[in-house]
Amino acid sequence: MTYDPAAAARHLVAAEPRFAPLVERHGLPALTPTRDPFASLGRAIIYQQLAGAAAATIYRRFCALFGSARFPRPARLATASVDELRPAGLSRSKALALLDLAAHFRDGRVAPRALLAADDAAVRAMLLPIRGIGPWSVDMFAMFGLCRPDVWPTGDLGVRQGLAHFLRLRAPPEPARMERLAAPWRPYRSVAAWYMWRAVEDRRERDRGRGQTARGKRE
Image 1: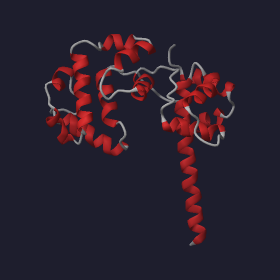
Image 2 (image 1 turned 45 degrees about the vertical axis):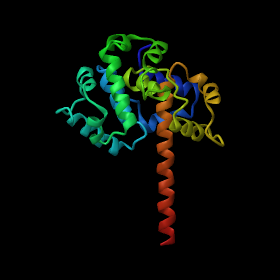
Image 3 (image 1 turned 180 degrees about the vertical axis):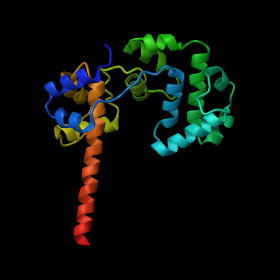
Image 4 (image 1 turned 30 degrees about the vertical axis):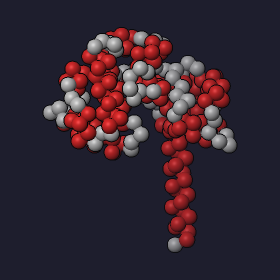
């Protein structure tokens, strides 16, 4: 299925009217499929478990190690060592993951054209053997790199928190319950997940506003 954010929004609002304010407030997610899956996956590894600003700095330093602002090609990265990558600010585990990623692309275990054309199950089969790439990383790549419309990342904390806030649950639901709750949102659960992240942002913004109001009253 081709990614169509307008069709996705219409479907989600019809299935659950509480999506309507989120769509009105945040518009439609603008996603563009990657043309370079190797660079997209490498960037994802670098950004794992890091705040955006810190990750961006490490990413720039990493690319600079290869004399460019762009992510290196598989053959070039594969010639590096862990010790050569660490000065960019990478942990040893991330350096090893990047080298394993390069090896998989260089020797053909992962072929870019095949990866871009593969179905979701085949994407997982190709990527999960790579060091440092787990189910969450595959879900993020499928959503943002491949623009697959029906990815539901049950392992993402932000989606869990957003779903709890959106449906007014007492606590973030576990994966099995998340699957049941989101079943009516098929085949556009990727877009639903995007709105769950926006729901978390809205809640944090409201909480900050309440905190500022409370401080103002005390002063």
